[in-house]
Image (cartoon, rainbow, N blue to C red; front, side, top):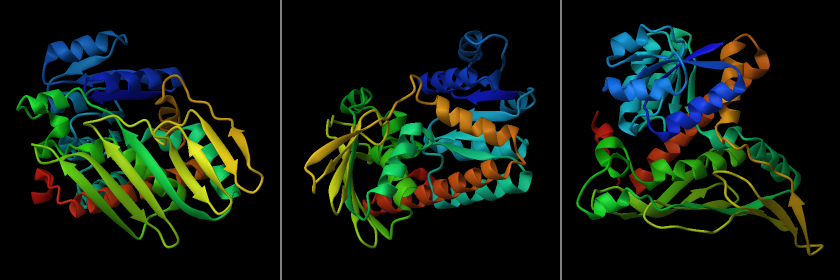
Length: 332
């Protein structure tokens, strides 16, 4: 049984803990918050988990794996401290702000013989794997268009002159990091690392991107990206082949899929099914690696996830650099 600790007490932490417990492989053993009352309120929902208000006390708890869901800019130092304390880390996407941070964590995890996972849930879902099989079956890809744009209520704070974490360059916020990461993960997971990337961003008052349009350039095709947190989009996502089009309700969570065959003028409905809790599949996969460290199949999957995380991180950095979006983390 994995003894799980949590840094970050917002809704996404609750969703991950609920998913982890549902797998039967985890027990919540520790909760960190700067405020004891906050940690206690979170922990009480799940039974007997202990609480801590300092990292020294938190790392001393009987935990072996830590889920980190704090503001983006804090991920690196918290993950580094956890790894040095011999803990596995599951870091909510986007895991790190810069290429250097990602590389240091990967090397440190290998050195300390622990696991590092980026919690990019969409690539672990059965529906995502099903679409990967369809892509292989349909022939030459000639292009794609991925969209994920959803209004954030915290943009109201920006309009009122405030700077919430998710829209702050001090906390590595913005649309491409928060929502665009799903699009980049899908593209790189299905098609590999692009040759180059371009991003045209609409910046908001805080200096980060409120919405933007990107292009991932491959040798024989391009994948267009549309992402944003200051408006809503209801477009599907599509992948284009020489003889047809694969249509998805989205790549962040695939609940509907179909393939239009241009030669036969027929549409095939592709059977996909999403879990009620969208984080249960990633939690289950992470547990397989942690509980079976000598298993070659899961070991290979783990190496693939780490390499994908590295490539996604590099691509995100290229995209935001292309749009001249700077974070405090870039100066370190």
